[in-house]
Image (tube, rainbow, N blue to C red; front, side, top):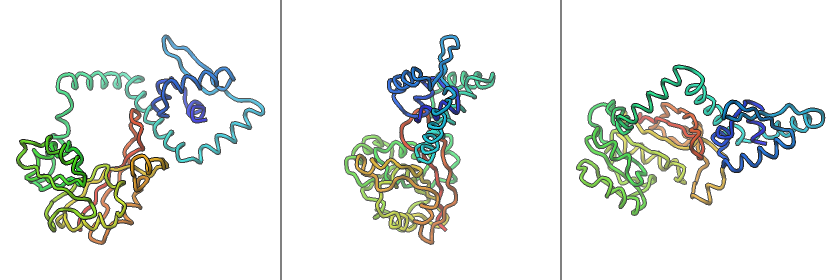
Length: 291
């Protein structure tokens, strides 16, 4: 059903179907073979490439497909499939179908070969004003602490798990302006207005009491300071509650706003484009300001 919805919309390769639907290639190939044999999918060869398209159903098959497609399009997973498919098609358009896209792809590869990619984040972080005191809430093993250290006067990494902090301690060893503290978001080990900014990346979905967590952030961030949040958009993968201990199935902008105390305001909520190469739900980036 998912394969046919994608192939009804666009002619695709097996690799593009794998990216768009996040299904293993062996599974895609097996289902495509059945669908082709039964006349639901047509195949077109172009050089060494093979392109697939949904065949036009006729008679009772057409009526059946309309019922199945309409039912599936009401499912939240269908929206996620469409978003990933659009990202795959956009990548194809930029990288393959235009001269500029091909040149752009070559330049990216050359620049990465010559200089790598580790310089990008420090360059962007250099835009931070002054020498801020920054806390990362739920720092995990500390990769962001290392990136923040050169552009901040002081960086405080906070995590509730001792083993995470042990790994972070090894990672930041020798960096004098990084400090680690143990604690959760609902009871932050920070003084009032101690930090200029806070970073919270893929942590909020683990926090049962969002209101208390945001109240703690409001206490710890100085007036005028900002809190940068990246997390999952709303999704329907309920298994995450059991397999990974998620307390929330992602957040929409209104979910964040509803949990904010009066001292905090949502300045921006941006839906990030889905990455065709990853399996998790799509993400958002939000900025909250301390009034």
